[in-house]
Image (cartoon, rainbow, N blue to C red; front, top):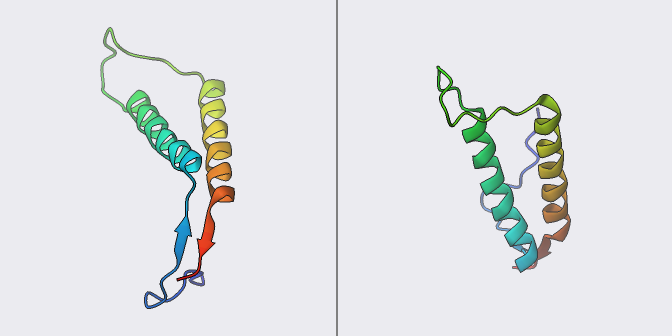
Length: 79
């Protein structure tokens, strides 16, 4: 597989609008929540949350859409 990233000696700056930054931090928090919900803890306790495959698919689809919007909002800035 070919490395698509520039050499470490080349610095590229990006401008991330505030709305995209907020979407990115919300996506991070959403991923952490999903990780906690799907973490295997052994015996089911009173605070166990069950998610259907459809619900997980919806969550992942939404996260992908959010990340697409963030990626589209990023503007390269000349150094």
